[in-house]
Length: 340
Image 1 (cartoon, one colour):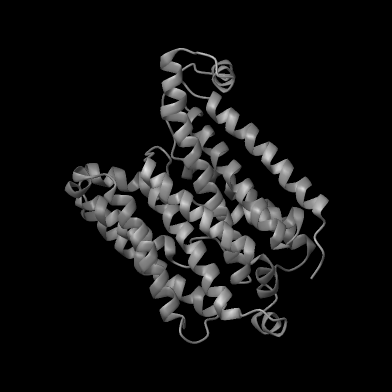
Image 2 (cartoon, helix red, strand yellow; image 1 turned 120 degrees about the vertical axis):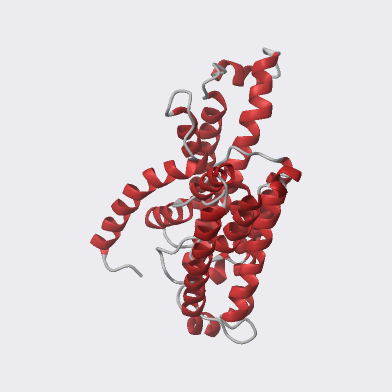
């Protein structure tokens, strides 16, 4: 195992933390209400500010910022782990079908309409449960009691996504106009519906998933080389794959439950960082979490402010930014050699 320089670890993560702080301050200070940098700095210094400005910062922008940080970190970290587990640098958090299960359950509740009127929290709870069920079925079908394989997991995930997509199209077709508009917003991804309990669910999932990924980062390095190589070097392949899959699936399910389907974060961020800082997951995993959080918050800031008086779904912005960026990174990687 290559020795990871402590100075390099601190330098890379320190730079990403600095970027994250700047992005967070920009997000807090940006918006159509006229509340700007001066109000944010005064609030941070503990000075009194206009009550309306204080409410906007603490009740609207700060919860949305926190949710964006958590969802971005969850999707990006899950992407880095899935790319290692599947040994495919172009894999993303949605490739295994966990997001499909979460989306199908959440949209099923949205299509009912009246259930949401009883309690809006039913949607994220149902979506999170759908992600858990999809994870259990995925591992069971792919050989959870025997030996799973990256190919088996990937193919099972493709089948899951196909079934989930068909179910989602059906539900969207039979839903009423109001429910259909909510389903559309949920499918393209948003951070506008901030719920404290839902944010707590994502926070707990991120802490668990990121903790497991960091603890098993050495195993990720070896699993990326192949199961036989990892086993010869002392890695309990099946046990570590199971823990990594479960922890990251929890993150994906929780993220989809509160924000809908936000694409490209889990694909672009880990792939770009891998090209810049290398594939050592002891550095890549925490770096990806920080970069993913910054990327999604910045995208959400653009979504809130790009059109005067209107707000774009953040998933549309990540797709618009991520698509061309992905093509650039893919061409750059192809110039270096075949993708591994």
